[in-house]
Length: 114
Length: 112
Image (tube, rainbow over all chains, first blue to last red; front, side, top):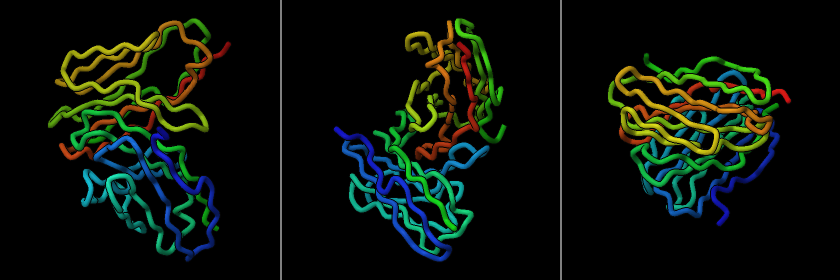
């Protein structure tokens, strides 16, 4: 049981390049989330998926797109990376869509955009 | 209160001291309050999920209380140890659809 896995762990992009961050969970959870963590800002929600086939914007969705490929996988895409997207990205999942269960976090992806 | 707030921002205590910190959240349309522990270079790990006014949860030396009517939760650590050093996050869903908003965290350093 691996929990929540993320790939890659580290990535350096040039401004304007695109990439997809991958996330998968093996706990049969319904809800999945993408957060970014910036110094002094805590965790901010980018997008979430309450259940397979649905996605919705969080606090800071601009510059990102997501795909809930199936119940296990939730990917985050940067179409044209900008230096402001330099951050640590965390994927998380939870059992339910009502917020009454805690979230399980992946190990994070450290992204640098130059 | 419109967002989730935490105080203090940081805390330094001596080993063996007991400590507590506060999470404030919007009391209207309350669904749940989460506490997470986040060690440096690791991922956040859920400590407690609390849903009912008056809830008290305990895990070892760490406990939490919840007041949904006034919109606050306290996290207590009894007899702090160096391994308790971490950032403690609280979070609350803003709607019923699990759109969880995190507070900025309280950074705890326990000095041996």
